[in-house]
Length: 389
Image 1 (cartoon, rainbow, N blue to C red):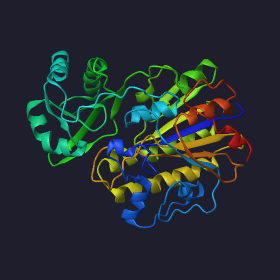
Image 2: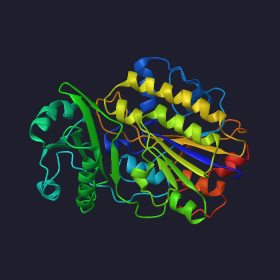
Image 3: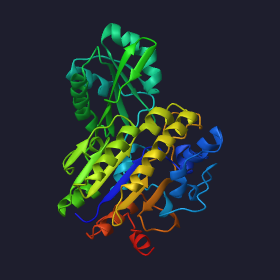
Image 4: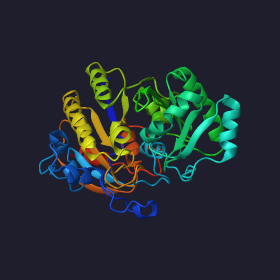
């Protein structure tokens, strides 16, 4: 094996309002930049080295001297969630937005899931996950009814205490709900297990997303068809399924995810490593916690430093995001933003290629890196920029 590509998605790390942000009510959104305004200058030496300060105004991260190709990517897909973002990164643009139910799900959906699973639901509203389990957790423990909630994204979220439903049972309920949600074009069913006592509930890292199967080719299926081996880290298998992953592993937070990735790269057995880091979104962004967001960024910064040291000269590292979740905008939902683009090799000097019109540019570039046909019409490869520097 002579070379490998690592594609790392930092969930929710937006770098400024997208051209169509107004359509999503997200004017002024800038996840990375606004975190720095809220908490003061950021000390993130690896993000600085990788050129993030070239993408937007980040206090403390100027990136006057940086390595790699940097830019910003706008999203073509309709919608504003992890599924559409990851799919487009992988080359598949979503032209029909998933259905969202900000006022709660219609009775016909809830009744069918209740009938098929044998469980009643409480909640059925737009809510923050931590807020709704604190509000309805006691009723859930007393009655056995499961907590159902949604957000501004296309998500059917089921929360259950581990003393009410075992993890296996919660996953089984979620898989049944997934079949019902397919008929209503709902992007993800998310199992949200939690534990603890009343007034001290804690969500666990056994969360699992049950997503719609991608309705077309992605970089995973394309690489697989050409004999390359793919490895998924984090929730990649939840968003893409297992069919085109030779292997995948679950992670318990960003520190764990980066440690596992770095250990894998010490003795690499695969060609393509696709990793999602979810904590900035799940733990801090949705909870409107800019100080916590910064603490999460520091964990990633340290892990990225180790990652750069594990790369060989012929390897390509691509870092991006899937959407924003600005923790300063007064909303708990995702924000329509540019996402970062970093393409790094050990020999690259710094170059800023500016704004580009689709996340799918990443999939097209990976095609060129592995010297296979670029089948992604919405993407434009920037690989020549990588190899010319």
